[in-house]
Length: 245
Figure 1 (spheres, rainbow, N blue to C red):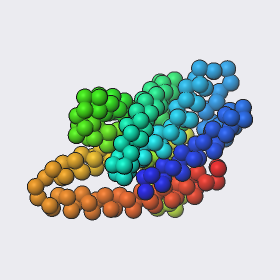
Figure 2 (figure 1 turned 30 degrees about the horizontal axis):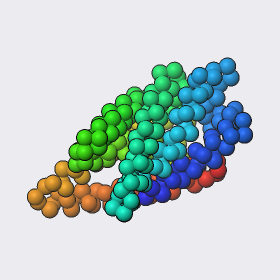
Figure 3 (figure 1 turned 60 degrees about the horizontal axis):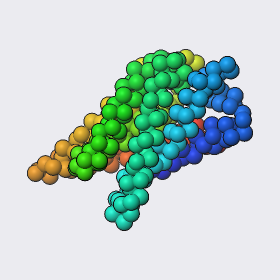
Figure 4 (figure 1 turned 90 degrees about the vertical axis):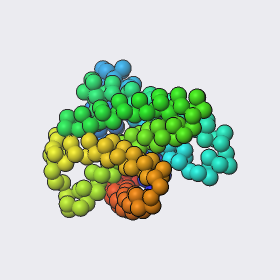
C-alpha cells in the first residue's frame, strides 16, 4: 500500500510541478502552492524546485528498497538504489529545512515544528543508515534504514492523513483552510514522524522477542494501519492528486 500510494504521489509531483518546470511555466506552481514561485527570488525558487522535484524520487525509490524479492535476487540494485535514495533524501531534507527557515514552506505555521523535527531526524537516520552499510553492519543498517524510510515518507503520510481526516469528518474540520492553521494540522504534522517511528520501534522489538503475543499484537496493528493507509491514499488520490494530474 505504501508503494502504490507513494507511486501516485510521485507521479502527481512530476505531472504538475515537473511539467510546469519543463515548459518554463514555474508560476503555475502557485495554483496549488501560493509561495511555490516568487518573482525576483531565484535562489529561493531553486531551493523549492530541488526539494519538490527530487521528492518524487524519494517517494518512488524508497519503496523499492523494501521489496524482499529485489534484495534477494538483485542485491546490486538494492545497493545502488539505496545510495541514490539516501543521497537524494539528504538533499531533499536540507532543502526542506532551508525552505522552513526562509518562510517558503508549503505548510502553515502550526505544522512547522513537526515538519522541522521530521527533517532533522531524517538527516540523522540517513547518515547513520549510510555509515552502518559502509561498516557492513547490516543489522544496524536495516534498523536505521527503516526509520529513515518512514521519516522520508512524512510529507506523504501528512497528506494521506489529512485526506482521511477530511473524509471522516465530511469536510474541513479542526483547521482554517485559508491560513492552514489549527489543532488538526498540528496533530497531523507531529504524528507524521512520531507515530511511524513508534510503530517501527515496536516492530523491531517484537521481532526479537521470545513470546509470540507481542508479534501478534504488532501484526494486528500493522494490518489496521495498512487499511488506514489504503483509505487515506485513496482519498488523497481522488481529492488532491488525480484531479491535478
